[in-house]
Image 1: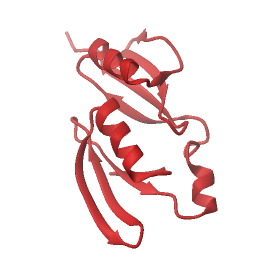
Image 2 (image 1 turned 120 degrees about the vertical axis):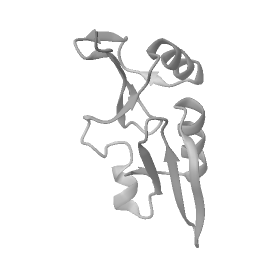
Image 3 (image 1 turned 90 degrees about the horizontal axis):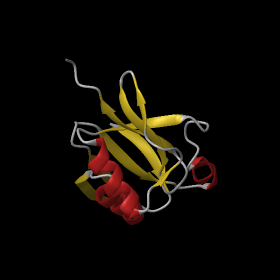
Image 4 (image 1 turned 60 degrees about the vertical axis):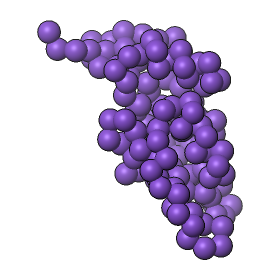
Length: 124
């Protein structure tokens, strides 16, 4: 599980569930304004959505990896996933491209973090 800083729990849940296809695995109230929110991917990966609590954390939202791709969303059907994400309004920063390892395209989440959407090439 990897923590991802977000400005708002509910906005982030909607994005990861509706645009990227994650499932809301847990949403527990920890008191005050804090929640334990876990989103689960279909390939086993999990995100802990952490709402920024102070100015330093808010400043890190969208740049948690210094501008590099920091997260990788795997799919078994690139064309279908890409079409669903595009229809939802996900910002792809490039057209899909074929690499020796598969099909890939970089996209940004709503806060500016960079992700790869990847369908790995199947072994012959």
